[in-house]
Structure formats: C-alpha cells, structure tokens
Image 1 (cartoon, helix red, strand yellow):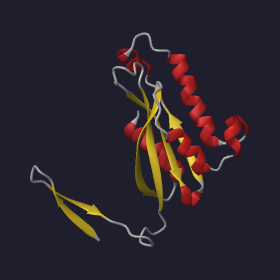
Image 2: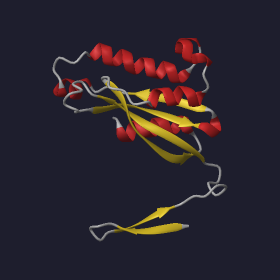
Image 3: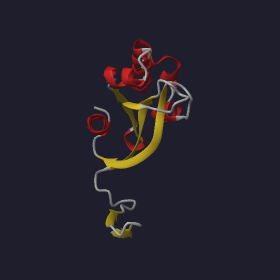
Amino acid sequence: MSERHIHMAGHVTERHITRAGQGGDRDVFEYALLRVVPRVERGECINAGVVVYCRAQGYVGARTHLDEARLLALDPEADVSGVRAALAAIERHCAGGEEAGQAARDDAGRRYRWLIAPRSTIVQPGPVHTGLTTDPAAETERLLDLLVR
C-alpha cells in the first residue's frame, strides 16, 4: 500500500505503509543520533553516534565516532577527552553486563529510554526515528556510516 503526498512546492512523493504482519521478516526499530553540543548556549552540534533499539529482538546498541576537528571547529576549548569518555559510557550502557554498572539489571528497552531522555549536557540525544530491519546490529553500523561519519 502506498500513499501519495503533494508537498507545498508541488513535488509528489510516495510513502509505503507497512501494516502489522506485512513487514516480512523485518522488525520495527527506533534510533536516535547522539549529538555533541560543545557550547549549549549556542546550540551548534555535530553528530557523534547513534543508538538503536529493536524491541522484537531485545537489542539496544550504540556506535560512536567523534570527529575531533569538527568538534574543535565549533569550540577550540572543547573537552575532547571528556566527550570521548561520555560516548564510551553510552556504548557500555547499551552493551549491558558488568561494565554497564547499575543499568546491567535493566532490560534493553529501559536502557534505551534512559539514553534518549532529553538532557541539557554536551552529549545529547536527537529526536527518535523508526524503521524496519532484519539485523539491528548491522543497522546500527549502517546509520553510523550514513549519518555520522
């Protein structure tokens, strides 16, 4: 099934809608970009990672990549090692296990929801988006390559 949408500029696009049971072997997933906002008062940011959650597969994962040159272009005094530590902590949180600390006891959905909660810090989650995938780990890598690197 598809819907046709006419945008204000007159362009026609098609959006395919998948109903329950029509996704084949694909599962719904959610993702949010991780943004680094070195000077919160300015609101400028760079993408530095992605967090992916797939409830059907019990998966939550994060992959990060920090472009130091871009970060320092926004703020020459940015705490690069502090940002790297925050991004590494997010990856550990998603992985679970002993390195996740207290979050290790939480299920994947709870760990994901904690990470995407809005915050006013240097490393912030962006808006949540959705998609369909057969392999959420591969999707995490694909989104990192597409939206961050």
